[in-house]
Figure 1 (cartoon, rainbow, N blue to C red):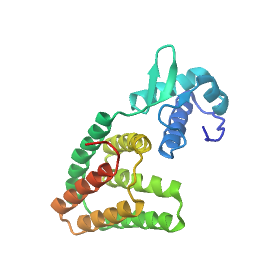
Figure 2 (cartoon, helix red, strand yellow):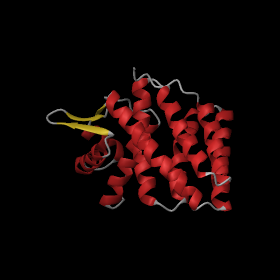
Figure 3 (cartoon, one colour):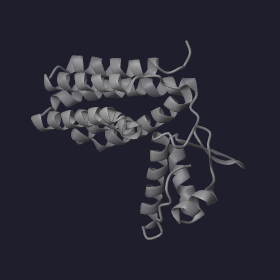
Figure 4 (cartoon, rainbow, N blue to C red):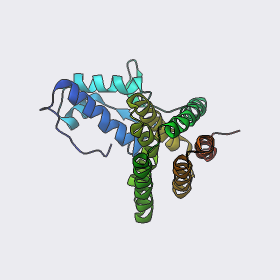
Length: 220
């Protein structure tokens, strides 16, 4: 694991647990923790400067999010999604995000469109810099940003968890999907939202997620 040591001893217990969950989730999204990797409680406790109890609580939360698998007598491991699970995750995302596109159009404002265009511009800047970490994070965050701009915290949390699972799926099944293509599709979605064309925005979102899934080696 490549994440830096983050002393959390001065934080309240709940905050420390949340911080560990956040750090490990980010390490998974950044492809620093591979599917199947062992997550040793004592090593993590030393790394974060907390008790094993707090680490255990964090690992349990991550297991609830399907990012970690807890095995009796063996410990905790980064989850290794099956092909079936991968297909189910993308199916759920298509259903959720097509509905989100329709809802966004009903609530669209110039400020919200401006915020999405700014996000897409940051994606382009990361592509231009060939910054893989920033690019990966921004491309995933585009979907969460839509939910945040709508003020729907529950949807934002659900999408964030699903996108973290997609990061694991991408590692497992060696996506060859071009980041530049995802960025271009995001830009098209924003313009459809700006035009208040809900049906086109929803279809573009579905097509985008179909393209991402199609570039994974999930078999026939």
